[in-house]
Length: 96
Image (cartoon, rainbow, N blue to C red; front, side, top):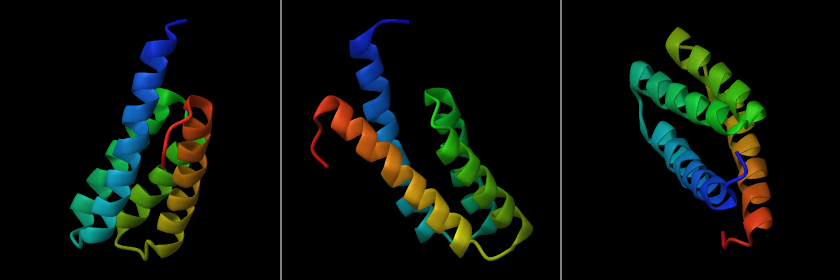
């Protein structure tokens, strides 16, 4: 919508939330809670156009709900989050 200040604010919030949710997912053991965290991250990613993150979070949510191993899906999600957060940091000159 052309509001660079709002864009920066939303992307900074996403950057922080994504990192927090990754740590939260890893700390949880209940499959339903883990799926909820992945679902939250999926929605946030879709909201900012981080499609690779959204896809990886969807795969993680599915695996958690099915009681399947989540290591591969979590690694893919962590990689995609790192990629998008680095892009946000570079775009706005943010510290890691």
